[in-house]
Amino acid sequence: MFSSIVVFLTYLSTISLTIFLVLYVYFKYKNRYRDKCLASIPGPEPRYPLIGNIDLFRIPGVPLNECVYKTLVSLCRLYKNYGIYKISLGPQPVVVVFKHNLMDAIFSSNVHIEKSEQYKFLSDWLGDGLLLSTGAKWKGRRKLLTPAFHFKILDDFIPLMNAQTNIFLDKIKDMSTDRQYIDIREPIAQLTLDIICETAMGVQVGAQVGKNKPYVAAIHDLGEILMKRVFSPWIWPDVVFNRTPIGRTFCRSLNTLHSFTRNVINQKKQQFISNNDTKTTDQLTSDDNIYYSTNKKKKSMAFLDLLLEYHIKDNKLSLEDIREEVDTFMFEGHDTTSVSLGWSLYLLGLHREVQDKIHDELTAIFGDDIDNNQRDITAEDIQRMTYLECVLKESLRMYPSVPFIGRHLAEDCPVGDYVIPAGVDVFMIVEQMHYDSDVFPDPNHFRPERFQSDTTSSSSSSTTINAYNYVPFSAGPRGCIGKRFAVTEEKIILAKVCQNFYIESIEPLDSIQISAEMVFRAKSPLNVRFIPKTY
Image (cartoon, rainbow, N blue to C red; front, side, top):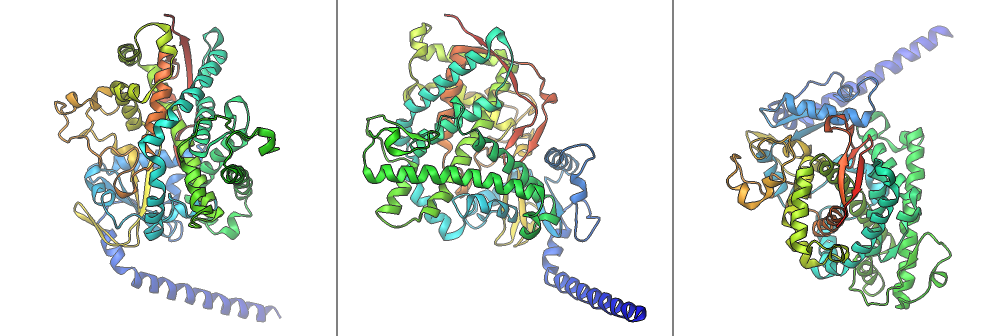
């Protein structure tokens, strides 16, 4: 009996080994051209066939999401002279590019618009919406949605942005009693959630008054889980991932997000059909966490209104199609903006001289009496905030909201002296590109003046700042559709804060822990003191 078992196990092992060797030879032969192209690209050799370079992204005692950032940056420094390197995530080769002259070919291309394989882990959340779709579907959706971001519609949102920012100002006044420091990450996230919901979605969610906190927490959870999954090949298969603790957390968070967005869509659909903006909260919903604005002024057709018109009148979109786009824009219009604002306020708190220049610009626009400083900011005011825009640009240079952009190459792509073969994923490290001293002299210092037109040309930089070496909103065909919305929102918030407060940050830059997830998030508190101004 025992000998029969030994014979069977020996036979099974031989068969398994044979299958493995056959598959190995097949894939090596199939990928011979790919491997030949990749051989010329520098990079660390993988230690294990199925694990690749995953071991590099694990540092004892350091959370994985922080390790990812530290490792990618250290490899960028190691291969600084090349501007490019390759790594293996499990069995998949990935090319990492971090020099602007090598990224141009990808950003400007109408062919290389497909997201990298790693984005597929977002599909359960965002579906096949504008962020993840490609080809004809992406082009069609982009064309459908572009009218929702027309400048005239965005101008209609400015009063709502003012109103929500005023709530934020009152809140931080209460939180900053006795000039204490406060961690601005959560209050800013609540503010941007209120703004995206009331403007693009046409609903009020009351995040700043304590409602819908689970939604914000769920987005943070999904960001951490995504990065852990990307750099853990053993949990790539859904059948494995869904049975792990983080897989179960993912499912709970996903249910929170989808429940929220479907509730918003269904209630907005009722309002759209009834075409009656003056109904009361009780008439519309029993859920007191989401209620409609009773502003009687007729609004232009915003994002969700446009989607519902395509659904109800033209039958171009299903409710699930709408859910995908709403989830996409709720994330992109809330989380990325809140991260950007957090970094901007923190950096201002380290640079009083920059605040003084903002103060001078705002005084030139509003005057120096308290009544003018308390009025709503208008579209004309925003256009005149040129130095404040430089501050925002410099903050986004140092801390771009989206630190990595991934693309899957549909065709071979020449980049410099290399050819990245079709079928390979490319990671473009935006944060490292923004620290290229050839474009941004003295890149480790916060200098908004580098974006002023009169100083850019006379800078010691040998390369002009342009759309392909400064990409906080991506670039090319897949550039961010909501860029103007985000810039308008952030300028209003920063201007109102600087009108009312001086800002002080306590921790130095090198003490802030950073986690590279879907967004460039500070994992340690961004403690800021708001000191009221007197007029």
